[in-house]
Length: 291
Image 1: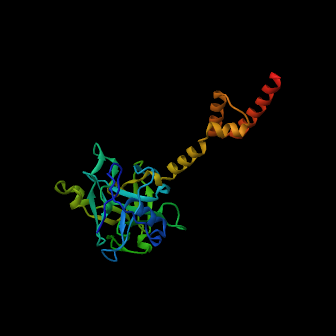
Image 2: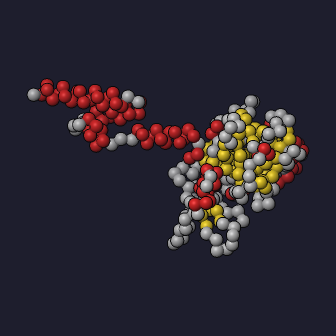
Image 3: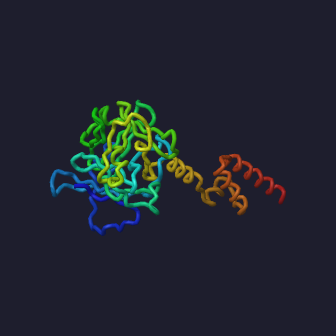
């Protein structure tokens, strides 16, 4: 059975006991990412242990800017009105599920409300940038067969589970997903042209489009903490943090407020060591001048 995602703003359950996840459940990055957004149960029986990990730091969702951003939990938002995303159930059936979490009905702010909407993206080494696998909430990979039919039934990655994410040439911020047979994921034209069947329940998602057009362009959303740029910014901010005490220890004397500000700015701008030396020299000159 699918379990509920942990989202920002959700109330934490007051369980008195916490059980640790078995180490075998976190053997791969995609498994670790999946556990980070879901509560995974071992399907061996009702008494099986449960692995539950809280989302770290930033649990918000952001838009993917480039295929190289893809990592960790993602959702694929279809060009439908109302917006819907690609989902899969426990049987591996792939379908369109309406997006409920949005700001002012803007699909650019889409966030998942059901684990079935979430896929864990993992880059496949040796196949070029933007080639990923997408693992669903039930531990199986999204694939496209030779007839263009989507399913999520395979527990291992084969050619049908290797998907290339390409930027849309006409619409910035939109992407197309290409199969290894050089076909594209798309929504069926019949579900778009029929005004009475524009909802996600009547939409067929296929993987046999010959070119990139409106029906085959998707919005990609991902958890902010997995985005490479955000990670780099966090690391940079951590490096920039330095206390007054650390600065005074580095210089070897007490510092004035303006000296502290200058040294902190130098740490952000990359000339920290030069400024430390200048401050030391200045302190020596001031000492001799006062004597």
